[in-house]
Structures are given as structure tokens and as C-alpha cells.
Length: 100
Image 1: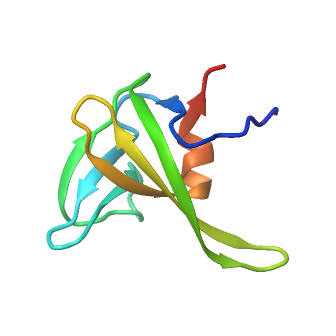
Image 2: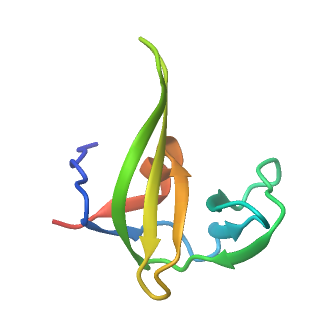
């Protein structure tokens, strides 16, 4: 599989089926991406994402980096309502794509 570099301000899209992921607003905290899987539930107000929906890549932060493992928090903005949320790198790679 080919990978493309994503840069700040790039437009990306949700490339999974509608409803397989949501943006969850956690009261008193931030907004986070949550896949629709039983063991990965976050309490909060959920806004499902539709196939092909567009987002803006705002940047990332490396939280932990080791030789064989890293944790990266990516920040995205939803185009239709400009809400900002965070997503982990492996979910980003699994659920989102970039068109060039």
C-alpha cells in the first residue's frame, strides 16, 4: 500500500462506511474520534461521520516515541461545522485518506 505525506491544511476524507466512526464530545474535555467498536466506547455526545466527509489536517503531537512504538495525537477539523477533534495515528491511517 502506498502512503502519502499529509501536511498542515491538507484536505482529507473519511474513507470508511458511514457510521463506522464518530466524533465524541467528552463533557469538560476535548473532542475525540471513536471507531464504532464495542470495546472502544467513550461516554459523551456522538456525531457520526459519513463516508467521504471532508476534514482539514491541523497538525500532530508526538506523545511517546520508542524504537518500535510511538503514540501520535493528530488534530483534525471537521469542514461542515469547523469542530476540532483528536485522533490516534493508527485510527487516522485506518479510517482516513487524502486525495492528490
